[in-house]
Amino acid sequence: MAINVNTVYTTVLSILNKEQRGYLTPYEFNNIANQVQLQIFEKFFEDYSQYIRMPKTDVEFASRMDHTMEEFQTFEQNSPSVYTGIDNIYGQPIDLYRFGSATYTRGLNSPPIEIVSSRNYKEQILSPLTQPTTNFPIAKYNSDKLTVFPAPSPTPVNEDIIFNYIRKPKLVRWGYSTGSLNQFVYDPTVFNPTSLNSSGNLLNSINPNLTNGIQQQLIVKPGDPADPAVTIVTANPNAAGLEIFLDIGFSSGIEGLAISNPGTGYTVGDKITFEALNASQPLTLTPPGGVDSVDAVCTLAEANFNGGSTFGSTNFEISDSMQTEVILEILKYAGVVIRDPQIIQVASQELAQDEVNSKR
View (cartoon, rainbow, N blue to C red):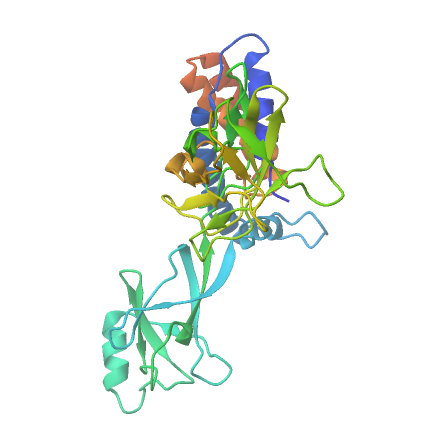
């Protein structure tokens, strides 16, 4: 199970604020958290290499080598290559971090590809005796690309080569909205740069402006008059699933136009239309002093999306068995940020002792 980013952030803040030592902003925390996760992630490989050379115990749950392998195998992937369109050259998947192996799907039972040096590659493809076949393929690997022999035929595709590799952890993100007292309020929704902010408010993007003088006519959901669902229309054929709910005040008209389901497929510049009241559409805006209803149109801006805002969160991807180390490492860096050497010293000593114990 991954480590909850809000648990770590609140724990770090509690420790820092216990004696009024200082405060760590969400921006500072996210930067430090990503550095710490990558640091621990890299350490898995160093520890695994060391444990291989040490005597191994077969006692259940006590094998450090097996435990470390489980930690980074979470990030193991098998994905097709990216065919470059040039002869027999295939690019690696975009999220590849550490290359493991590759298989050749054109051969019988998808045989593994032997990775050789450029010199050996040239020698083998020119030799009548050692020339590779589809069942015994070879490749040279450089500049993040595989040059495979024999070349796939007749039509090369991405799925000719399957990469086995380790990807990097996703970036940690403690997402938030701003409360009425300008405090940071945790947003637990999963971060997706192209998703609309589920806790966002579209009022500022609506034209015409939704002012107190505008009256609203709503068609409510059958059986639930307290739940005024708005039907929307968008010209984007890829958009789907958006639900918006109105917060109606007795005297002030619309007080909120909040997204309850962010949907998918929207892009910056998309226009969402809340059509004038008719047989199928539920929202009408009546301008002050007028009797004709008009359509409300929302033009989506960058700030309406997770990627252009502070909304949406991403947990640590390393397992929760590393939570103590994550908190201590963050506290160490936090001591640098708030210039408190005592925090740095205490956290560093604890980490050093844990390191010594793990290598005994």
